[in-house]
Length: 291
Image (cartoon, rainbow, N blue to C red; front, top):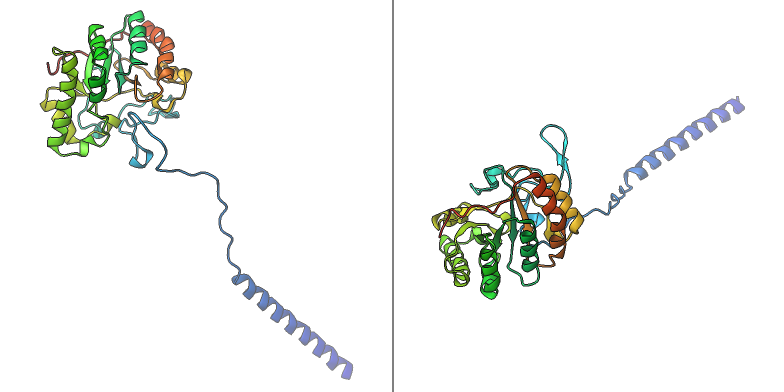
């Protein structure tokens, strides 16, 4: 009997110890802090450099409605190449984004520049192409001879604000109008009879007040269809590839002849011009605006 009692005691004691140990383990686990998630190494920054006709990423999608750096899914389920997606019309406040015909328009922003504009003009002359130059007022003031050369070659002029003010559309109506008039005056100081038929808002950051001011002064607000993001300096080959793949009948192509190192853009024209002239009719936008 004593042995049996001792055995029962040992069994009960063993069970008790197991219960205590189990409870302690569970309690301990509940007190352990979950490890922090591991960093993936991916990050985005609103302070990334940006320039020319693209707003910073923090401003949301580009007003052109597309990203030139990577392909996107097309409406038919296929893949669109960079530069193909049409602009988002509600963001443009009525600004024009196509030629309105089968013709294709090359546009060059931010000039004139004494290093790159003459090279662009020479190549356009070589291929018999007329283009549209969106000039910055202070550059027109500093290089009137280049404005004269643009007009002498039969190209169309476009007002691109006095100092490439991306926030111009958010200024007061009076300041917007004064900026556009000052830029037009600098252009006409170089070429008194110049027709300035278009206005392009820097960064494509259109607002109703800036569109309204341009139209009141007889200028058509001009956006774009194809943007190879040449301002990011991707190299001549990539610029040419995006333009060649993205152009359709009626496209307006955005390029730059100033605002930074534009040699890649100049070099890309050696491929863009023979390719596009073989497939489309390239013309300057008509001078039907202010005179």
